[in-house]
Length: 282
Image 1: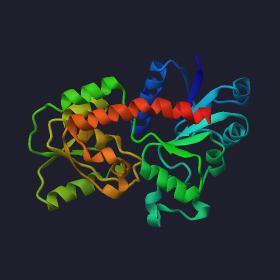
Image 2: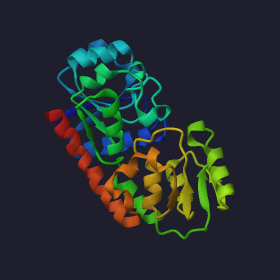
Image 3: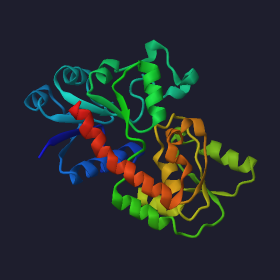
Image 4: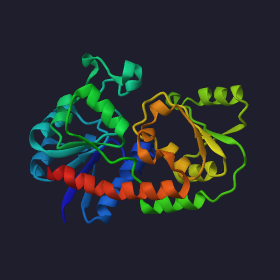
């Protein structure tokens, strides 16, 4: 059984953000495909551990807490893929601050770490285009979406059948990137009836959302896919958003909704295993 060390700042048991949900789904699919996946925190890595396991495979997701000397050692000695979520090739980790999403060269970060990766696997074409425009790197590929497990897709399919209340939902988040106040102002300006919803449990949040006609989602970040927007569309919710900031809009499947979108995402999610296998094989 092939062993893969999956390295991240946090895992699903710690946080339920989009990145952690993505990682959870990829890990589950790799395990279902017969890989032995070992979860490791970035901060727990040591040179001794890397030396002992230098012939193994590594997938690196978010790595903010990974010390620079560990990144450099991996760049020189390890076979790794970067599973790219949130623009860590930029110091500010957000291309929205720059014209055409292209940062000045002095704003780049971790470029050597990206360059030495076997592959940098992005979520969508927008994410690929932006990282290439900023770094000029060629070792970039994509899955074509975020990744879900079959069980989670079945859950979403059931929620899509719920009756709607005619209102739009807004995520009730204090995170300034989620732009709650901007969403509220948009609804009030356009006479859209809305309610704020929240839940720390992501499945319960989706259940609440499934009773609404639509979702108003504004962001202060260039979303490499935007898991929530895709989930809303799979549940047949209408979505009001800033299209140019949502990576999902760069994929052909984005015009779909409901069951058709769910089945398309299922195929893309299944294909994620092949993407990682091929990336290590090159």
